[in-house]
Length: 165
Image 1 (cartoon, rainbow, N blue to C red):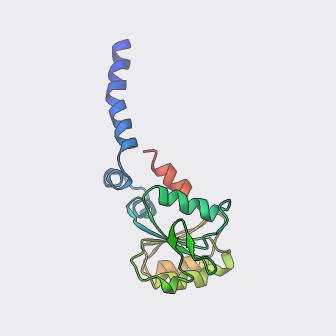
Image 2 (cartoon, rainbow, N blue to C red):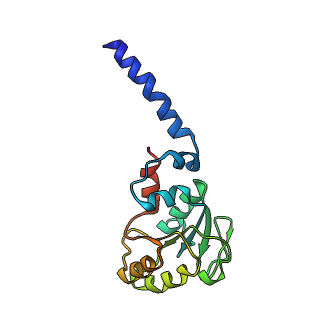
Image 3 (tube, rainbow, N blue to C red):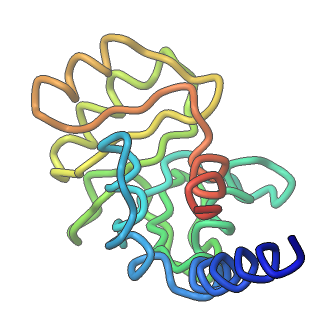
């Protein structure tokens, strides 16, 4: 019994170390995806955060910081800030001229349809409405354009969940 336990540990332990020490993109190449959003999330580079707050205690700031700390290039959008997380802040989505993988939205549900209209002009792979934010009209617009749409989920929580594998 002791030999079997040692054998199992010796087979599993290197895999656990591999999963915990590789970067997100190396890990993403070998992951068996369940949803399109998982593949996009783990392979994305540029994430727009619409509605990022200047208040470090708010979720929009802490989620953006988490994503930045995990290798994503954050593109902050806030109409009144000039710099957040050491990055130039865009006052609207229309100012962004660089490629975008994900548009992460921290705005009230009723504002999301217009946010998605503007976001789709950037040709993102995915639009993400954070936990507690839902708008089925916005979902329909994104899906008509073939853009993956996630609503009422926290991108940080999902990233942490996927990073456990």
